[in-house]
Image (tube, rainbow, N blue to C red; front, side, top):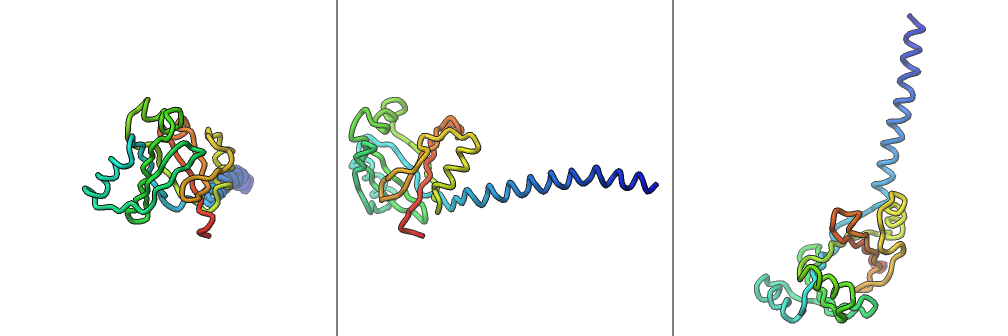
Length: 169
């Protein structure tokens, strides 16, 4: 009888070790991603001036910044609602990413962006998980944020951006 109890314990120990490993891995994954909120939703438009009228006159939002990001061949306009921003994207070059998006899909939601306090760590985690990254290292985006994009093939068709504001630690 004692032999059977020991035998059952030996079977149970590997199960406990495996369960502990799974839970520890999940905890590490949650801690390394550290996504805090939706930073903004990017909307591709043909004309910021035209689209701005809708967001200001109809929705009552206030545009608080317009800037050009030459490296991305885009002009942006920002509105804030709660903790989330709306980013209007107007292409400054038809061959730029937003210009190509509008040509192929028309105006509309271009991407969703998540905020983090450690973009490098998030990118390392995603890369280790085999996620298809457009940017393996952060680059400068609008509002001085460090940004990186995840390919829509890895995100069920949604272009996803990860953002970090280095000034907000």
